[in-house]
Image (cartoon, rainbow, N blue to C red; front, side, top):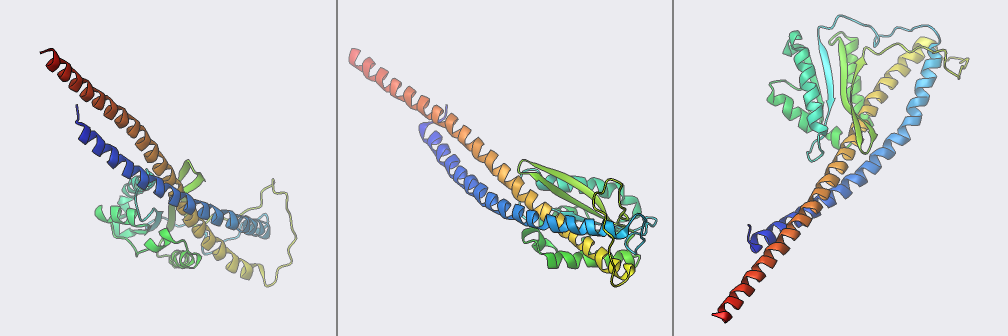
Length: 286
């Protein structure tokens, strides 16, 4: 059995670790609250813009340079992770799925797979696997910026419109709740043509100025830029939620371990006292 000094040292170590995990949980929780606020404030605008676009296009399909489907010979993947660890399986799940997807598309040739990693963890992991990444977007993972996200979206849109890539995919964690983040894989480009569904309750006869084509040429890129920014906010909120849960679990585990160590310390101390008393009684009787 461990000595009293060893048990006491372990108790002090676990106590210090518990203080760290508890503090990290509070920080992550505060960041999560801010990230949730960003999504809540942005969603009504995104939903309204989507509804306006749907009604604008009417019942027929409208073809744009961003909706043309081609044979996939060159593909781009935008994958979102965090810059730091201690967030449970958040990064591991993304890296695992990205690796599986890349292996499935290896037949295209590594030179025809363009990877845009938003986050240090996934960037480092894929570089170790021998893939070449397209730029550094670590700043976006920590501080989501619509301006920087729009610049990346515009770069991807230009490449697709010019035929430099035939498809663009997004891989990120969708924030469902603090305890649940859903790994999401979506085709970003070519974008599906919007159609008005029969279940739509809002039918508006728009008077369009300028022409429909000019309006769509401005509106469609805006929707695509907003989509990428939404994925960025989603991933950011999921990261903070995952870290909050991970630090809560770590704190709870520390509490359980402290109870076990305290019980062990008390038992060891009691045995030591009992042994001393037996030695005293034995010495007296002798």
